Length: 297
Image (cartoon, rainbow, N blue to C red; front, side, top):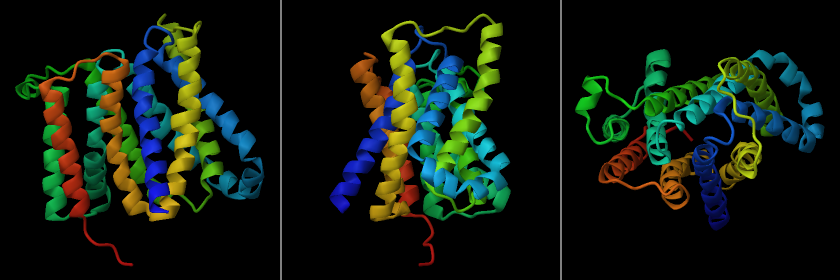
């Protein structure tokens, strides 16, 4: 069971890391808001088709909480990926991967500010180390640029994506008990609705690029099916096999895979500051995970 769980979770994070690479490859072949809208529209249709019996069963819960699910989709799905794909127009896939290691740190900050959820000393130390890694990444190895507000615009957009996903994760405390399939359907539908005005604004500004080649259509297909649906199913199975705490540690592989894929498929150069930033971020997250307060059985 453990070997199966490890395999499933590694594949899951590899596919999630691939979202960065595909988003970067899509630049010039499909505009970011169009990709975002098409992704969630196709994902909503796909998950509805394969999950209709469960959706019918859980429809009363969906109907009762539909504003919450639409909000989850708008913030955690549509806004996160809108900022991410837009940021990839201006920054590298490696930087975008490292920037996302700031998600656990922001989750900790939001939980403390909003709900006074305290952390252990080890968690504070770990998050501080992670923050240093993120600062090195967004400043491209020159932290003093932060003080001069001289930050790559693409990294700023990716950090906005990180903020969106962190807020979405913290808000999951209000999620009702529901099978993941109908919840994904509702959230994907909410993401699609939220992405429509984003794409409309892109069109009005004259920056919309419609897909006309394999790369553009391939980006839609990959992002809609693999990181949106297949990874979710594999992750749920991994959680069932080894529990959420152990399975959650594998999420830390996303920036690792994102960096590797950027080097392999985007021909991006791995600079020294990338290695330092990634190492600090991963070490910081590992310290925070090992030092988290024990939960009652």
